[in-house]
Image 1 (cartoon, helix red, strand yellow):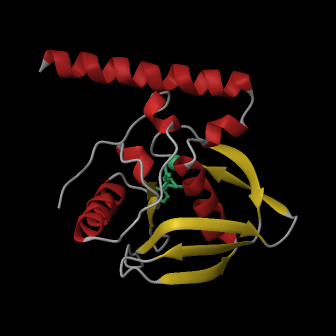
Image 2 (image 1 turned 60 degrees about the vertical axis):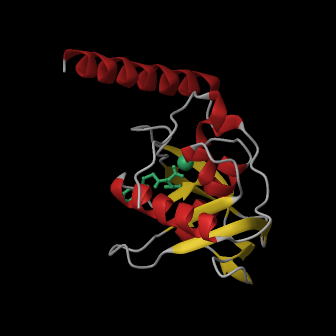
Image 3 (image 1 turned 90 degrees about the vertical axis):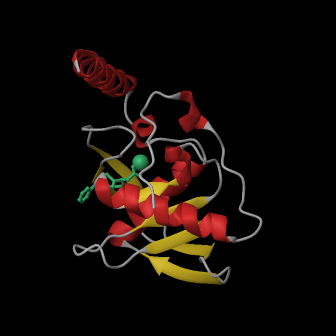
Length: 174
Ligand code: K1U
Ligand code: ZN
């Protein structure tokens, strides 16, 4: 298993559109295992392959408190089941320490493939609905800060650039 570096906003690689997975191979299964390790260590509740600079349609997620309910979504497609939206205070491992409200569809149908290569469908609401929409946005090169005002997005960019400068200073002293 391996911990993978997570790209940070405004890295342009986060804007890459992910391509579909053609076949679920051992390499994909190993990548998913490494993504789970990276997500749990961060810590986070979801991770899209885009965030670790792999541009394929692969998402891992675990919404449980005990980190014992791993979910994998390969080539996911979502369909809104309602016109209703709900606000949720989102975070993102690629936009560290920034949290803000985003409105998303309250209920969605998810169609995807699992690590055995089998198709499955499920209906989602609550945090699962929020998180799958957030992660699919990553696969399409979109970030939650894109839903915020230009001023808030600029502030987020400046805050992260400051964090990067501080980290580089600490590393240079080592
Ligand atoms: O995609 C990501 O960057 C992961 C992101 C998922 C997400 C969270 C909240 C709303 C939408 C999408 C995160 O995991 S941010 C960290 C986080 O939410 C968290 C971390 C530790 C414990 C509980 C939550
Ligand atoms: Zn994110």
